[in-house]
Length: 196
Image (cartoon, rainbow, N blue to C red):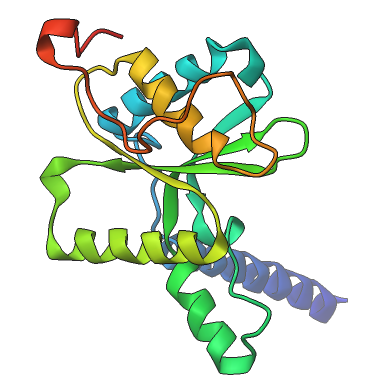
């Protein structure tokens, strides 16, 4: 009987020691912490302007805007690629994201990709990334709109730019506005360019 008691005490002691090591190991193996925010201040300002612009046009109530969407969730390598070629193509997009993706609310069809062009980030690396995104979007026939970062956005100019891109899509939502330039242009200062 005494041996059984020693075995039980030894098993409990070993179990406690193992549990302590697992707890200690799991926290050191996963030294992660949360980001303070999902979007930068500049990204948030453009996101809010896009949402406000789309919501202000009643025929676009059926569109949703998503931020920081993984490219591989929007575009995949073509079916003609197989094996290592497919893996290589997938690897080039799997860890990158689009700034914003505009989709239909009803069935999540992708309508438009929007990229924020921050003038302060025009490094060679950023220019290569931009060129890469241009190529993959063109290859997949997914419209891409680049909007330069600025303090405040003219919502009507933003609407005209977004709508012009949407009108070029098959099954486009037509608001009865003629196609304009597909790159966002800020209004001249004398016309209230920074007004939202």
